[in-house]
Image (cartoon, rainbow, N blue to C red; front, side, top):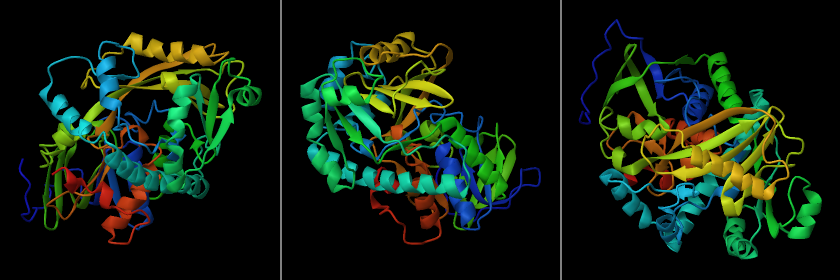
Length: 432
């Protein structure tokens, strides 16, 4: 389907009805955007091909981390990824295969792996992460979201002093963007954190980070949307969408709908909808990045706050309701195989650091796809060439942490208000 600026005819009567705003995607970005639009007095219909929160946010480690603002596209990433191509359980893994779309994406990604672009990406991501971090706290209070939110901070833990020294070089830039850090030596950290085995070289504490249980957060966003008059229809896949000068007309598995504005918040599935929504360039902008997690009942001793075990790239999060190991990045397309070796890497990594790396009961083994944009910056804003079609996708591994900020940023742009975060870095037109 080609983009059209023609007047959109009314939806047929057998459709699911008209809506003021149509949000496609009931994941964390779509529901946060729906909630922000409802707060503006807009009517909202959310549709999803699957179930609420069935995508990447379900198995996320739930950390809200301005500290993670530096992008994956950093100097040195490409040589490291090439070395890891023959290591299937490496933290960043690109299985050798013929995939022209992936290699074109990787070429564009590689061109961003320089200090200038790394700094620009860090600036943009830190602004949105900082805004969203505080906004989520406000939403938890104002909407009474029961999601185990805690202003815990987060620690980066190191066994290798050289690796820590390399990481310390980023701290002046992070502080420039409002992200404070405390450096703790190994012996002092081991005294503070009894969950850690001996051998810690040091840690970096980001006290401004926070955490929540992501599946419960998404469920609570859905509750808040419905309580404020929004409608959510699950198992209602978008089949096509045509945007015109006076609105949009969408065809879904449940029928047609006409809306004044539409927001595409379909995460890693956005490239698969590119042609159906008249944005073929979107296929080149985003690749699915496969991540894994394992969730257990709580072990005997859990860390006092979320940890990132840096050398093995494993995130550790403990809630009152469970304990999770997560992370890894695998560019294998939409391969739906649960890779046992990569799941095992999470446990092996945790065993190097933790006295109790797993809980007594394994509750879930999970994988899901993150929407990785070519420059590691999300696409938030008006779709190029369209008046009423908007995008909120491409958040990579930061979808939960950027959720409330994304929703408010998009609601501000739709209402033509001056947003709290400069939207220019997120403009989808940079890929069109």
